[in-house]
Image (cartoon, rainbow, N blue to C red; front, top):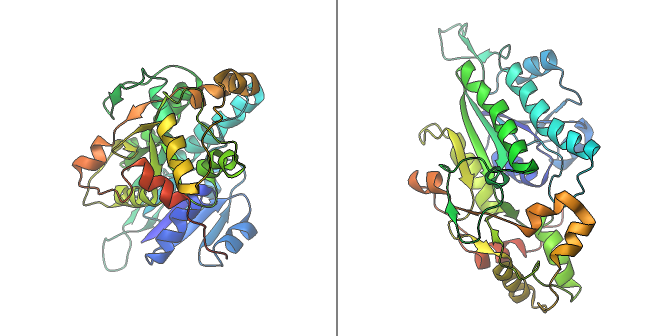
Length: 322
C-alpha cells in the first residue's frame, strides 16, 4: 500500500513510519527537510519537501497514495502561550490540515478501473491527529468517551477547529478518522523523557497532589492503533480516542515512574510554579481528562499496555542505538 505521512519525523510520526516500512508498505514522508527525512529512515522512505501550504504541488505529490496520515503540529503543551506562539500552533495544525484537504481535490492515482488503468481516484483514507485536549478540563474521576462534547479553553477550541478542517475531506468522499491522542509514553523522547528527567536526577514527584486525571497510551499501542484505523475492514470513521482503557492520575504516574526507574518520588511540582512559568500553557499539565477508548474497544482492538505500569515499563526501555 502507498501511504503518505505528514509530520513523519516527529516522535509518533517516526515510529509510525518505521512500523509501516517494516510491514512492507511504500511510505512517503512529507516534511520540511528531505535530507533529514532520508537520513532518519536510511533511505527506505521517499521524501517530499513542503515548507508552505502550496496546494498545487501537494496535490501532485499526493497522487497515487491510498492513505494519508496527518500528524503535523508544533508543540502545544508545556509552553507559554504568547499571541505569536498561539498563532504558530494554530497554523501548524489548522492551516496545514486545510491545505492537505484541499489537495485531495486534485490528487489522483491509478485506481482499479479498466485494464488500461484509466480510472483515477484520490486517496481513500485520511487519518488526522487531534488530542484529548478536545474535551477540555474535566472534573477528576469523570469518565468520558467519543460521545462527549467539546470542552472550553484554548486547546479545546484549537482541537475542534483542527478536527473540523480534517472532516471537510468527507465532502470529497474520503473516509476520515480523527485520532484523539492521549499522552504518548515511549522510549527515546516525547512526554515520558520530559516527565522522567527529574526522577533520573533524584528530584521527581507528581504535579501538585497528583489528583488530575491523565489519559495515556504507550507509543507501541499508539502506532498499532493508527494502523488499525487505516484498515478498511474495521470501517472506523470520525473521532477515535487513542488512549489506554485504564486512565490514571498524576500520582499513579509518578509512582510508576519511580518504581520502574528505581528513583525516589518525593518532590511534588507546585501547580502555581507551572502556572508562573507557562501561564495559560500550564493548564494542560495541571488539569486533565479521564478519556476512554470506546470506539477502539468496540472494534476489537487489543492493547498491549493497558495500564500505566505496563506503559511506563515500555517507555523506560532504552531505544536501540542507530
